[in-house]
Amino acid sequence: MEMIEVQNLKKGYRIAKKSAGMMGNLRHLVMPRYDTLEAVRGISFRIEEGESVAFLGLNGAGKSTTIKMLTGIMKPSEGTVKIMGKDPFTNRIENARRIGVVFGQKSQLWWDIPVIESFRLLKNIYGIPKRQYERNMEKFGEILGIHEFLSQPARKLSLGQRVRADLAASLLHEPPVLFLDVNWCKGFACA
Image (cartoon, one colour):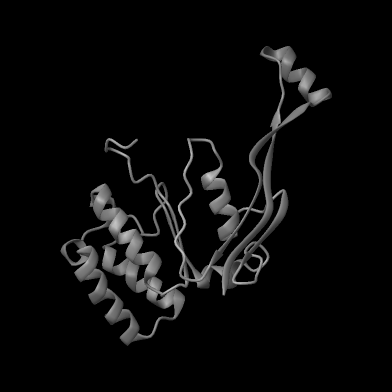
């Protein structure tokens, strides 16, 4: 089964082209000019059920922008995206129930409450049955070691603990597709 299909995906941003100073601002107000910054330039790929794929590239290469389009957060300028046969932007709510996402710079955890309370809120948001929730929490405790910090607020977690908690939160509802948009090398010597 095709889980993800991307055809000629593009994303461009209009950037104001201004001259410096007050006169430049005034000129832009009267006769605005824009350049287009191409963040994603016509990529196409397919990912089948069971496949794992990594997106590698330099900062500014369009990796996060592509993932935002795949998750339905951002609409492509051109091209098509299908996640399990549906457009993620048009079907955002349905898509959100069928995917898990970890964005390294943005947490799913509520900052000031204990991590376990964030998990309980997600259980209710996704309508996860009690037995499935308990089974997954036990599994995440064994694999990710989250039990040691469940009673701490997210703001008090180390980066590694927060990443493990965010990973567990994104998998709690057992989505068939998982997106990881994180810089795993932060703080490490990666090449």
